[in-house]
Image 1 (cartoon, rainbow, N blue to C red):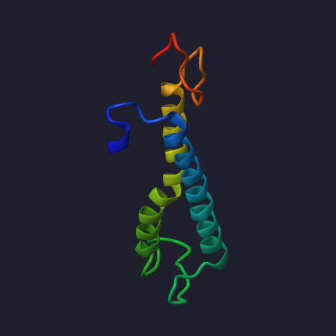
Image 2 (image 1 turned 180 degrees about the horizontal axis):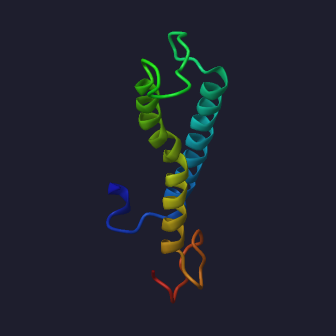
Image 3 (image 1 turned 30 degrees about the vertical axis):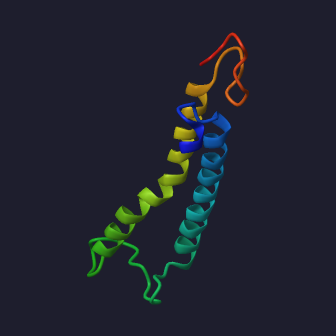
Length: 106
């Protein structure tokens, strides 16, 4: 960030947007997963195969879930990383979201 001129990014400036993003991603992909599971249909209206690979087209289910599981995990993983960053940037004397005191320059 050019305007900081070598100073550290405030913890809240990174943690708050990341926490909001993690929450939104988790909610969006969870709702999509629930809707997909409840309706059991793809975008073109064909039903999703319930069992694989016992019938033709069963591998579509494997490909679907292999592609979708990382999206479902994106929000919670971002939340975990945000929490780890918050803890790492925090201090015993100031707290993670408070500015450092005169004697503490972490």
